[in-house]
Image (cartoon, rainbow, N blue to C red; front, side, top):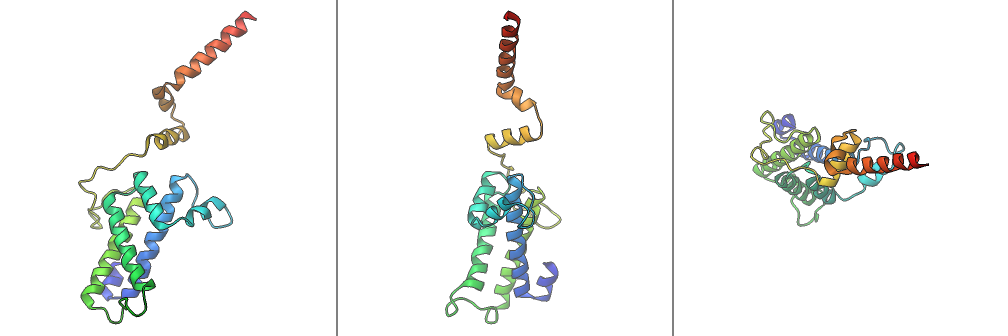
Length: 185
């Protein structure tokens, strides 16, 4: 992106930025369901998730603690600007040829920021000084919902979560009852 911005390649910058945002949002959504981001024929569940509206995916990722409110705001702004530019009214919307250089630069900066946020969050980076992604520096990373944390811990094979919730006690009681019944027979 920095190369395209430096060269003033506006359309390419906007298209690449959008591709990066859309791809990474899809990838994070698929990851949250513990699926592999595979080609179409390999897993139909991935294709079902890809068809979900981008705004719904962003809301879902906020709930799951993958992106912050500020991240979502930047991505939504970029989405809105890009949609007006490429899918807007032909007679009323701005056209890249008629846009001022300052406006093009502002939109390229927004594209760069949104794509950097999407890339960083996909890899689990909450903020990154090296890339200038500092929007979350003073924001505490949200935790996943309780039920999701529980499921993740079970998938990781953690018995601590079972002990912490009291399930281990319930399991021990059932085993003890079954042993005592076997002894009486």
